[in-house]
Image (cartoon, rainbow over all chains, first blue to last red; front, side, top):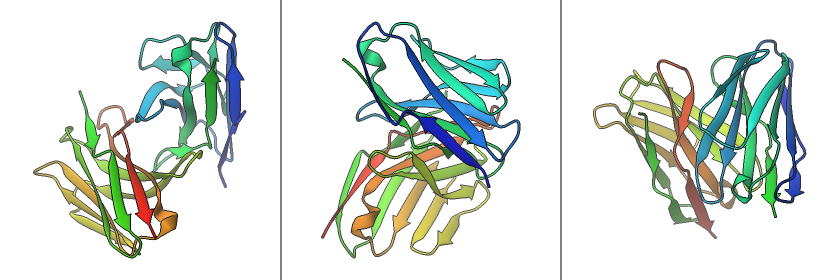
Length: 111
Length: 111
């Protein structure tokens, strides 16, 4: 069966520090992968999606970037975090219907 | 562009029925979804409905779709304290296949 892993579960980082969040999927090949952010009290915002290795689409201009170095690995990064980057980051994969299976998320607090 | 809207908060008593409402704008949506998010966790797919259906029932859950009004609802019968969570409505963009989420409805179940 397919599973999705996200880590770390919780992260506290100072402003200006770099960020790397990792997401991996098991049990499937060539999935569509997604990064969503959920700000406090707000809904889900799609940040990036990828349909294959090295293929990244950005949905909104921001301080973050994404990379897909391997088929089942999706990484969210920043060179310098801002306070506004705080939130709950969710990775998801889509391999058919029903779509979008989510990881457990990473709670990022930028101080 | 597409937009999905939900009321932010609903409070019910244990044993009552809960009805969570959602409106969407993309008339070409093929699938509509309900996800549940428990505190600190990722999103769990609850149920979904294809756009050519009016109703779908799955145990305590009933989904009603009014395509004319672009209105989707989720009814939870005999609501339990374990149903307390945030419920997200989502539509699937016909052209890109991406999911567009509402801002989520927090369901509070009082004993």
